[in-house]
Length: 404
Image (cartoon, rainbow, N blue to C red):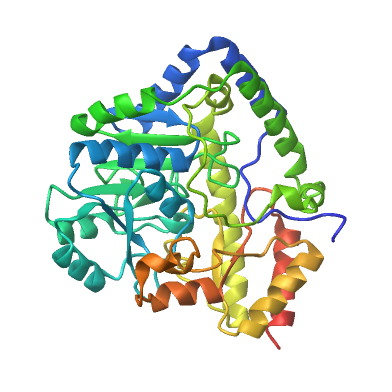
């Protein structure tokens, strides 16, 4: 166990001022939630927005609403390499997971395979979920053209991409309905939280019922959140992060498949935490971009693959994925990072079809690109706690360990 300076793999810092805003929002109640919703609608150019307790809750609520619109359809098509929260939400909504492999060299769908799935499962598919993984924009319009069927919805998962853009549009606004996560380690954090946006009145009509039926945070829940937020503001700093990281019951860094999560509406405290959110999105994004640019220059010198990074057109990432071909080098890098507190981390343990609780449903299906991503990717920290000194140490470590 390392005691001392330790970088978290991802972070959206909270300050004492943010906590104070949250407490003021708690006093303002519903008006604080209305303010945040109105700001979201204006910023994203959408007609409707909904505030919930997590990105998983947002996706589940969306799927429940779509299921009411098209009760005869029960499959949700997602990329085979993605966050486990997505299949968790699909199962929570009482639907089935359908997978599509990734195109080599991208985090987007293999569009040839996508076309075949759409053709053969057209009548079962409720929706397709393009995912902007790590902030890399998926081509939602290309997905729409391939679907070419208004009865199949597009749910745009921008959980990791709030504030990002792609193909001339704000991510999260191109599909029939979009979602963002406000959990710790995302582009913006309200400790926990989720946002749904849509301009489709028919979807909004069902979301009104679905979201309004969710329970509220109690006053004691909000006070507990405020204490958790205050702890995060202190313990996510590199000088202190070793402490929560050393506590196994917190399970930091673990990827967990859990379809039994709690679902709630967002609280006024969380909406208060989000005050000045546009300024924070811009500032955090600029810092992350600067870190990515610095890292990509050094990676090129080392001859390492910066995994889909392009210095001429770098998207708004929350982590920088790095492809390491050798399993021995990858493990050496992760071990060295752990010892030095550098925040280099694994991505997801497996592709979705290998999640133990789901694997029996996929039979002999395999998704080689997705599996390879799980086996060969690591992510480098680029968040606002990362400075030039940290970048130099990470690059030195990568250069040393890549000689294995």
